[in-house]
Image (cartoon, rainbow, N blue to C red; front, side, top):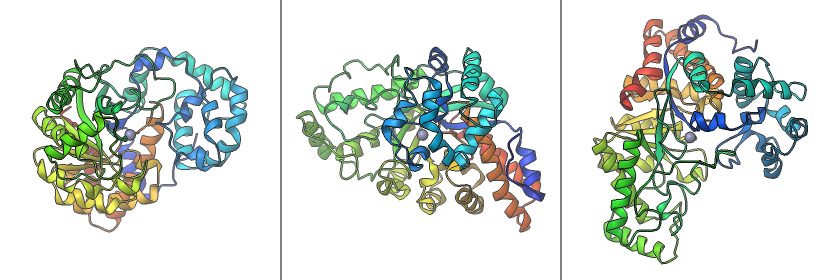
Length: 434
Ligand SMILES: [Zn+2]
């Protein structure tokens, strides 16, 4: 049995009280279950991360991109791929990333580590359980998660267990003629092995850049409407520097792109400023949440929560769920929510980035925000199993943050557990209308 943090007193009491509470996993990238089980499973799925994250643990441990991609090459044997992985995994099996992977492997496949000796056996056990009902067994039975909200490029799979958030058109790319019409360059959001078979969000006439800016805006509107009809509960954007929307400037940007030009991902982009503003409006009308990536990832210097202030204020009746506390711009995210009641802070991913950072941050959030403005957990992964280990670590963290407040005499143990329940369950349920 893997050890959790050595907990005592209020920390342990709160953790124990949270151990089996109902939760909502508020942000994932897991593919639809039917696609997960249609693909042969093996142990390397635990290392499948969204896109090509240079920030990923294995890269920081020294692995190069080519070696990383070889982990997913099914033409190579499991021992051969383990030999590639092992030197780097040795360096990160004790990190937070390593801990949440190992907690999950232990829970579902019975080994407390991934080693050259057991990789074959873990893969075999994964194959045996890779069948219908997998997500229910992981999310409902093991995590007590009523549902997971996933963003994986489409929305054709929404069910009781899995809900969808869709990417806004040209969510986070340099805008060229080619991706003017595409929510993202690749529909699966960069998940190795799941690129095929996506049901695109169908908008007639949106397959090629539509004739004229007005027609383009109609297509954007239809994209959001169609996403809603398919079951989406939110649209995802990025905390890029949002300028004031200007239709004339946006139209000339559109013509520039249609003529073969490019508008930048970072920096002035009047087309995106305008179109995203239109989308935020539509989300308000349809009751969709605007989900916003902020901080860590890509060029995080540009992904600051404070960039959202003007758009949040222009749309007071739209709810903005801001991801990742803008890490490293944590104080800006806290300030954005403190100053705007239509903003919630979604702590997805943070619990496996830094326990120290997120514990300190949660103590501040409990002080300055109203109880309804924080969502405690989202796994932010491609593999559903990893939500389990991630959720456990998040509960260590929430319990540590609140225990500090309890020990200072500023909150009772009972209040701490009540607040945690809100953050894990009531808030995502209310914010996303589940
Ligand atoms: Zn994410």
